Length: 185
Image 1 (cartoon, rainbow, N blue to C red):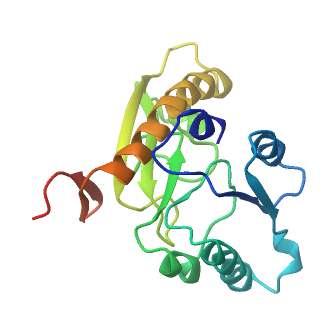
Image 2 (image 1 turned 120 degrees about the vertical axis):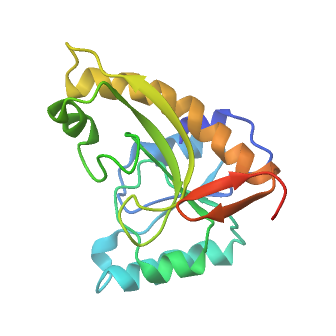
């Protein structure tokens, strides 16, 4: 989130939302003069009720692009339907490899030589949306999940703002599992 704030994107960051009241991103957003909102998911009867409330809050603010950054809660069909092809996430692996949690540990245990980061559109399926951008990071023989995560994070801070900027300023379309930039077909 901090990388997005500092990127001087061609759109305003209108609100930062967290389901965790003590999330560090909330204080960072407030320090940058950005509105914050906390929606603790435990106060809702279930995932769908939370998703609908979140979509309503963002819709009331005329949000057109949702960028997930450290939001560790899966969004379901009702939220995705409210923002079709308008929710971005960044994942610390080269999807479709190693979706979900502990991607760096998965990469090391699997023995891959290259991992990285992926920006993708969010769908109700976990880390399965069309791919917007990727960046490769070599996996070193002496890597730990933490050391690999640190190097991937550096790429995430570069990749995510660039991908958001491209989504906001260029023509794009979804073809299968990827986002294609350029003239519309």
